Image (cartoon, rainbow, N blue to C red; front, side, top):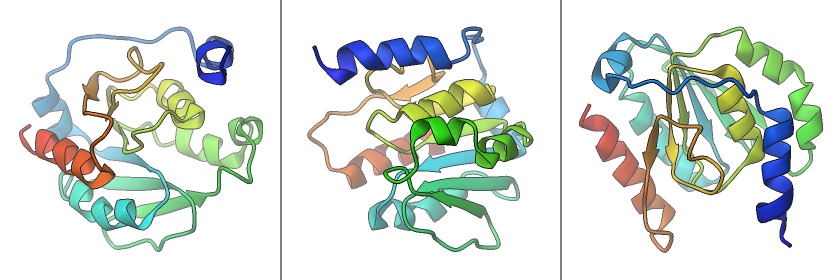
Length: 171
């Protein structure tokens, strides 16, 4: 009996909104029309360095980067909200001002750059219910994203990000 196999599915059923639309999308049209984008970024220098390349996919759009880990600075192209998951419990994040602030934006695109399972970003993806939800294929997320990028687990994180970026550039 492991955490991933028993407790996580129960938490997802308990806390993730049960009504979730899964409709076919014209990604090219939706990505061009999108005005508000949320990018969820795990901590680490490699991710921070790749964020501007993902931002370039959405020029002149309101983009917010939700960054887990040490704070990074805002730029002219995007705003950053940083939080530290190891110190903040999942339950506190659900009730936080952060979640209330994010729900007020009505994001058109939700982009999850974390290749590992993260209960908070999964909850956020489902709770915000953006029309376009993009992320890496991972355990318990097959019904959360309308575009899942599948990669080999043994690839480096940089190669995973590069592949996702190239896939998104094709739209």
